[in-house]
Image (cartoon, one colour):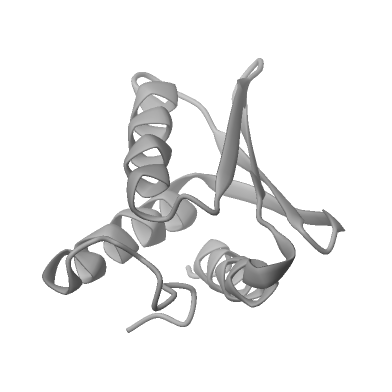
Amino acid sequence: MSAWVPDSCALPTAEQPLRVAEFDMLFTERLTEVARPDRLRLCLALVGGDGVQEMVRDLVARESGCCSFFTFTVSPGPGLIRLDISVDCAHEAVLDALEERAAARRDTP
């Protein structure tokens, strides 16, 4: 299982790989920038398009439902969607792993 899926995740174990795959697809297809302005916050820039904002909002709403320690902020802009992700101190390692996964997927040809 992915290092960014913590033991505290309430999503049923059988569904966790599907959720990870959804994030992987988002990162591979839409991610253009990864920034870490501070240790508890990750900022992603995603290429927009038809239905992308709604898909991102749906995905992060479902993720918040099982991993309530995440705070997601979706900010649409011209051609890009900003996704800010923050966590509390206890989940910094989860954010580290998510950042590594996002950056790796972004760099996948």
